[in-house]
Image 1 (tube, helix red, strand yellow):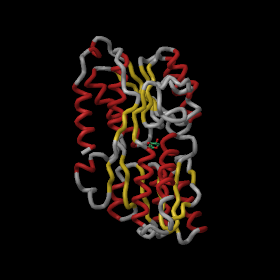
Image 2 (image 1 turned 90 degrees about the horizontal axis):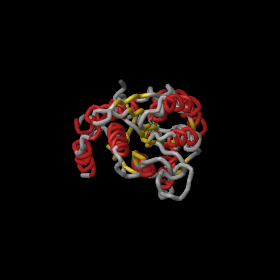
Image 3 (image 1 turned 30 degrees about the vertical axis):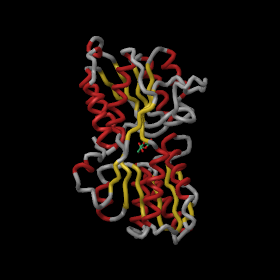
Length: 325
Ligand code: T6T
């Protein structure tokens, strides 16, 4: 129902265009968390569709890995070219603030997609916090996503046993919030123990070897939550290599094309697919609205599609798989 409502609103957003965008061909740059991730490739496609409908120029500039020390110079180079607006998925809650502020001070409209800067993801509050200048935050509800993952994993393991979170690194708004939501929800299950989080730096190989190490220390491990695409793929590969397919349950955040086989084989019990295409489309729309002098909502929440073995052949579900190119 919510999905339908969102889809309807998405259509409304894209059709209620006043035409003013045509008077000036705005230049908008999308800076993803990294360029080589199906999540951001899909976000780019959504942004491109919206840009084509609105008649604006869209540029995609990012680093090949999730690393704020690589993303900052990319952003600085984008600012030097002075686009009208920047849509960015900041790779760190604090480290991107100075450059993003520089963009805003130069008169460039700044919107964050997927991740946020600062402590809350609430912008334009007037409370003087150092991230308040950002116009809008367009993203999933990541705390809720973590809760959904916890409930799915608890059910998969019969509400009993040891589990852990395979995560990227601390300081990323999205994955921090997923872990928070997961742990808050898991605290409700008295027979489930959440072991120490394993941080993999967005490196699937590292996530796989970390699973082997966790298993060696905890031969009775029952499940894990891969808090993003590379964490889930990597930890899932670790489970497979250890011969634990189906015995150690995996809940995956994100939906690369490979998730179809992982769900069918039983390696992954459920995948929580985000809607990055919608993030890109709404982000472009908001940037154009802001440039046209309109007030834009400070938060737009995109939904989730939960993928399981049961529904993974349904086109209404598979349309939310991320594209790899
Ligand atoms: O999970 C997404 C994104 O939401 C997160 O901020 C970083 O990782 C992904 O891009 C998946 O790799």
